[in-house]
Image (cartoon, rainbow, N blue to C red; front, side, top):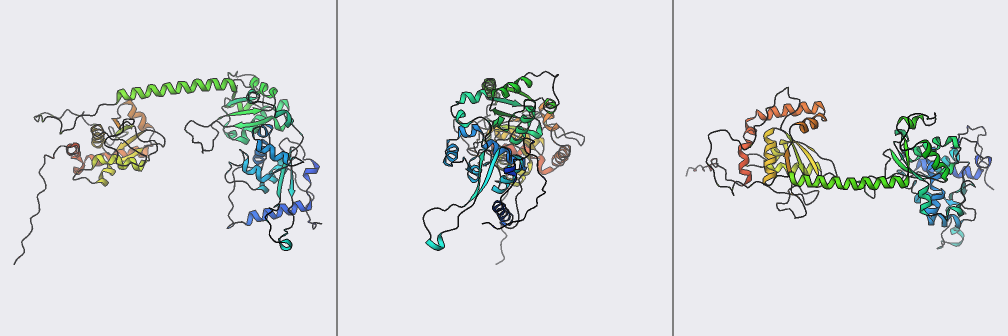
Length: 511
């Protein structure tokens, strides 16, 4: 016999997912079951240093994820889940197993406790799921000693109630049958862009046809082409939804077609209509997806070909060229550098675009690598890094923008990268390989001017632009940095034409 535990009789009941009253057999709890829940609740609250990590999901979201974890499609796709259900004569599944093997629950961070799932199921899915407590037997160690037989540790078990399509019928279905029941949803409203949110939105759109709770079988979030296998897919406004009945598929495709008409929408779909919600069958979506992938591949190949044609050939070094007599007129090897004034909206001529950087590199490595263009006899590495104002680089890209302190620094960097064929061998390569492999392209730099330069600086905050203009004015007026273009010749292998530093004579000591 279990001890009697008092409880309140008049407790406010929460509305279930289907807006129905909970089943009496589920709403009432046995005294031993209440004691088990209280003990686990106290253990969960007092564990650790008293700090609990709260999840962003509500109880209703946990209930929805549990329903999707026990759908007909989940049982069809996971043979191990079916064997676990068949192992129990009454069809119960350990909640701990579902928590660690479900594609919906196992990817939550932090992982919810069994107690929180039990509360969510009983509060919002009591009409569709049945939960019971598995009381553990007392330990036999004090009487018989420790044995190799694993004792039952107790816990919670959950099962489906008799509702929806029979499982034995679904077992004979093929993937083609499920694809026929799958649709593609696009332009999902922002506050519904999650798996529980898509489930609620679909239920709202199907409210006129009075669907069952098991109408939605699977919700899949297609990953981005740059996502890794270990990344958790996030809803970007589109998803694939699989239904249990073909009638629901026909209803959604008929009321929310791909080419929508602006009139004739009901109040239930007012929110979806506001954001341009539309649907498409999975076969048509797959055809459009293949067309998009082929177009994207062809476009990338054309861009790569154009980049190869636009990359300037490296100029010969000063040591390989024949000496030419000095001209009395102004130097015309480079165009006149733009003038920076205090009223300039941005520092002109200070932006350099670089291609063929390593996708796995970072801003610190690129700053160190490109600062080598300013390592001269009278300029230290710190001064070179200071000349590089900002590295605009995003992880995974093979291009970057460099903001230089003055137009002189920008021109020196472009000349340096054109005369020195270098390539990053790895993401952390801060020196660059002098002779890159044949399958890797060297850096290609160009000075950004004109409309491209204006469009780039228009996206930069005004405060940052003003600071860049002030820095360019200060550096241009500095005597130490104004000589950098003349000193850049020594960087490309030519001997310095200036006088060498004279050796300091030692003072003779008096005998």
